[in-house]
Image 1 (spheres, helix red, strand yellow):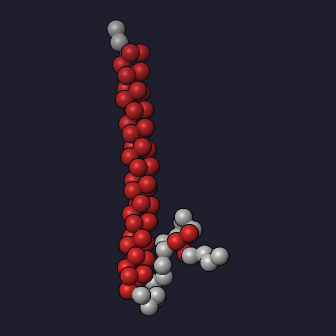
Image 2 (image 1 turned 30 degrees about the vertical axis):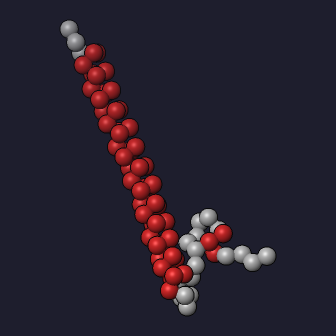
Image 3 (image 1 turned 60 degrees about the vertical axis):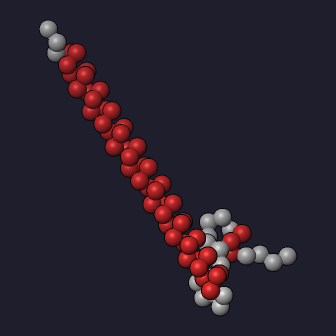
Length: 70
């Protein structure tokens, strides 16, 4: 049984120095897609961090307001 680079879920399929132009194109597209996916995942974590930070700031302001209300 022959295995291909595309069988590994973490690596792009094909080869950058393949003689077949279609394989090269697939490799480049898959590489770009994986890079974009990694970037998107990183952005989701940043948005989550900013959201949680903001929620805590609002909570501290509300606690301060309640504790200092007359």
